[in-house]
Length: 296
Image 1: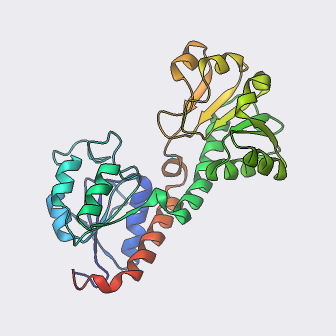
Image 2: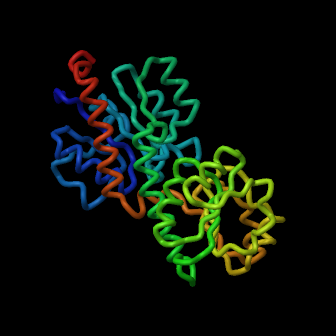
């Protein structure tokens, strides 16, 4: 085994393809399973089964999200051993698991069996840098899906968490007139301090028909049918909250509104940057734990 530890990457989107390239260039031995991409060179070892990948490697990097249906590992649709339960049977104390949005039942299993896990989406450094890529992708989607300029538009950003703050900052550079809708008065005060307008969610219905764009970051049903009816028929709605999103999509369709749930934007718009961020985070952690590999 490499003194740095062997890494198995199991299932991947394009950002993790770039992560593989970066980790390989840093000197790690990489095994892959369920990944076919022209960017993966012959120097990176391909395995023929989940069992082989996990036997060969003590460091496991799985997709973001780990599972899309809470049953199978993401991006392994064509493979018989894609089931999370099968993966859990193969896990043991020698493994360190990296993934995104690890299901609670898998986290509990790892805790019980003293298997070290790192959830990319719970790491502040990843989340902050991921918010930049998400904001840029959100703006790209808005430009692509609308018939008007962002410049000079009146836009509503729902929520004022990490992604919303970065998104509002980027939109401001486009000379957008920004309104922030939030539940918390402290968030409203902070939005005003940043130079935006603030609206409490309880007061949201008053001026909904005046917005050209609505950007939702809240992972809860905010834009109900009643609220959607008050929006301009020409509005563009970009929803980046976790599935199923923050609006009633059946109502939006019946109202013929231009509404889109846009997930996984970093992997679509900036996979290389996002992949290199992931590689850097993984390497930092592995360097900190490097003394453990020889004893596992």
